[in-house]
Length: 568
Image 1 (cartoon, rainbow, N blue to C red):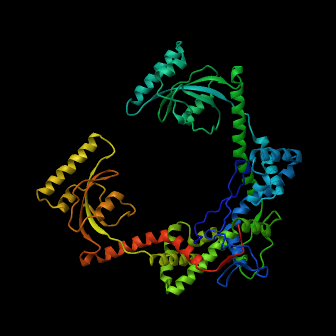
Image 2: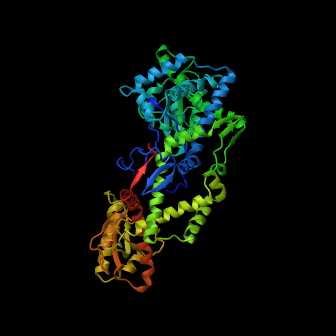
Image 3: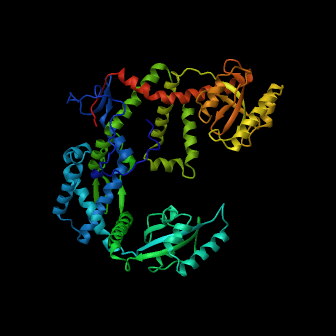
């Protein structure tokens, strides 16, 4: 399985939300074929295929190269958090962790906490460490959290655009404000005149209530509207505020320091929300700053090679080692079975290709490498390989595997009937009874009349070609059923026509009505179209082959004696 492009993400377990951590279980192995290790003497094999051993060392090294970075992205911040809390004297009482554990048990019921931990390969000690750190994080940034000014607002929106000019909208907004200042009820004016509180500004279609606003609110509120709202005192109506959808009149119904007792809960809940949002923003920012200030070194990929002892540390943070063995254990627990299965597949594919005489030319791999080099620009391929912890040798091996799998599958794909067709398309929306739709149908009917009168299809295709037709002739090229990028109904209808035949009825497409003419097919075409049909068949077989690869690998595994010693 090609590993280029794998995106490593931090593995964060949220047991109370019933998170499903990726386990990397064997992709194709069945229970019957993945039995327990009944031969303790086999200590260095991850799997055995017809007597051929997949080395446990190879699995461990691949796991470390591919996945250690993801675990280090969590382990290093965890250590830095622990270190900083110790430095600042921040401690979490064990009783508080006990309470969180008890709450977790209640939330998970009827599932047992121990079962959930086992499912996610976590010990109770690791769970307690995770809970302790979640309590430590807000304590770490507590001195940075501010009490924000809160304002409960309502808005009246005067929209402009297709139905009203901007100048008219501004004049109306000023007139409404004048009426309000002269005593008109703001809520009544909203109900009668507002064009709706835009979701971008926190309003509602019903009464323009924007809720309680505050600095850096997570709900999308345009900056001019938010700034003006936060500057208002209770009971004050703003000047018209220009936003992308219209002019807004905003009234401060109340503020955090001037509101009725009935709003106490609303303001308390909003204050708690601002507290959480600030913590969620400040914690990663603070940890990132602490990491930037720390001297961190990492083990190089060149140190993780067969036949060489692993480095003692996967990373060193200010002299503190992150043990390689700890990282390896996590990598193997989460991804060992998956990597073992990949290596089993690779061996079976190589063996099957050898038996069938399928060889991959180095020039084919060179083409893939050069294409990837162009895609990486402006980054160099060498820089990209370093980021993805791979070497040129491994990259070429991955490409070879990908080409081999496709070649194996292509042999199972039979040629398909194809046609070379021209199209005349009248654009419209077939699902609509609009004037445009009726006009499209009328145009197609007129074209059909011209065809009956003896006009040539290809001449009419040029005459009525759509603006975005690159050929300017209605030439669809070589097409086949369910061809990507071609309307399914069109492709299927074309392939039912004989050479020289024109569709008798218009074909509905997603954007109009079409007539088709087939000028040749895969069984009957001029010699100068041989290359085009060959390319189309190759594209079709390659596409179909991708659907067959999994099935072929399953078949190869079932035909082999495969025993797995690394399990999920």
